[in-house]
Amino acid sequence: MQALYLFALDPIAETTGDPNSYGFRPQRCTADAIEQCRLILSRKTSAQWVLEADIQSCFDEISHEWLEAHIPMDKAILRQWLKAGIMTKGAWQPTEAGTPQGNIASPVLCNLTLNGLEQVLRREHLTTRQRQAGSINLVRWADDFIITGRTPEVLTQVVKPLVEEFLKERGLTLAPEKTRITHIEQGFDFLGKRIRKYQGKFLAIPSKKNTQAVLEKIRGIVRAHKQATAGGLIVQLNPVIRGWAEYHRHSASKRTMHKVDNAIYHAVWRWAKRRHPHKSRRWIARKYYTTRGNRHWVFHGSTVDASGKVRVHDLHQAADTPIRRHTKIKAAANPYDPAWEVYFEERLGVQMATNLQGRRRLLYLWQTQQGLCPVCQQKITTLTGWHNHHIVQRSLGGSDHADNRVLLHPTCHRQVHSQGVTVEKPRPATGVGKA
Image (tube, rainbow, N blue to C red; front, top):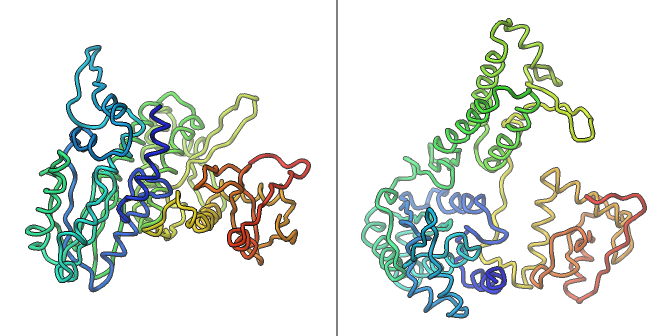
């Protein structure tokens, strides 16, 4: 039942959402929020002061009265969600505030509660002169947000009181220990990044706290697998290393990635020495390290899969992840609005072309169509280009699965949407396996 109500609430939250709110929203990610920070802070004329803010126990303190009065859904059902209570050590405890614990609709309820803060700052209470003089901009990820201002006085005397008044109506307050005003040259932590200006240049690098956390996790895995084989250890480590590097691939992270690789090298070397305390360094190096191309000292191992096949694994290097600039989603983009369907399809095509799994899916789609555009029956090549097209639009409930997608020439794609042409899914060519 909660999922059914979520299907109804999510389009409302998207339509009424703040343009620069990014948390718990479809088609938006932390990279969009960081890129927005770059846009509002990187120019010479940009505001130089930042109000860092975090809402105190946001999910636990939202006013039930406000939710019942403003959330557009069946009030009786909503009241049952809110008053369901929680179980602690087998004992039931009532809930007098906050969104339901573990409810899949809780993130959307949080966004519906906080939607409107950007409009309050930009339109309702600030005059045009104050907005221009203060360069006030909001970037929010769930209950964590920043607001820029030209001077600390603007943030202290104008912006912060407006935010506190907005939150008070909803039963919320700012967390004092996490709310501060910082100059951009000093920098601040936001979404795992350290954002600052150095000699006038905007930088977003992995924060020390974020880097230390991933290294502690990796060292914990190494300590917990003292008796594992080298291949088994690598299988545990690679997803963590790759995931952290992929998260930071859109910012100035290469130097930090090399430092992380160096720390991992020492942790793994200690693991190998601990396993063979009576062996020489040269023996350990020959057993666990190899050369791949021009790279020496590659930690490697093997595992045996369910079919009995031996698989060789190399420890992933975080610094091998290429740094790519992220293209921020347009602030007004709404995946539930048919007018934005072409935009999201083009954006999906770009995202697919930048990762291995996406390229595999592109190849599968191209092969199932025998390399032909279903509209004009002409070849699709790198010279002609291509667009992803959803047979059933996502705004109408269509999925991203390959069964609902085809590749079209860009011109054919525009004709399909402008003229309402129906596209049928081609039958797969013989021998084409599903991606």
